[in-house]
Image 1 (cartoon, helix red, strand yellow):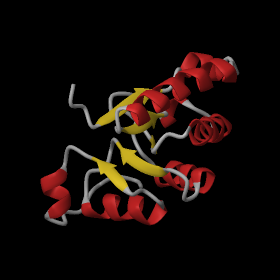
Image 2 (spheres, helix red, strand yellow):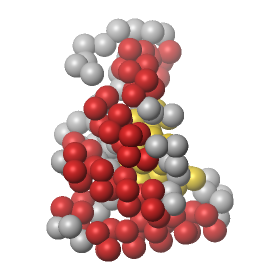
Image 3 (cartoon, rainbow, N blue to C red):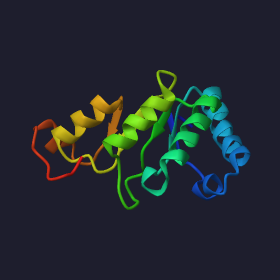
Length: 140
């Protein structure tokens, strides 16, 4: 119906239960559907809820399934993107997938830090402030 991008949130419960076949199957179905309809596909990890090991596994599953992006968060959980998470995700996916940093990016410095860490796309509600180059009080 005209959608050009699909975002899905990883099944956090199944990932934490180590039911990787289930998680992969869900991700793969979205990947296949997105390719069929020429849509960009993104897997939202909700990184604030995952251990580094779980983030690595999620990125590997997304890479194997053939998605286009891994994304840090929805922006609705307890925190958003961190430089550490973006760098870890980029390290795992390499040049095979792109990384979208989303949630908690509130200033130009935050945005630049995410880009230097490996993000190729940013999700932020503070776009005007970022473009204006305003400083942030964040701890990124």
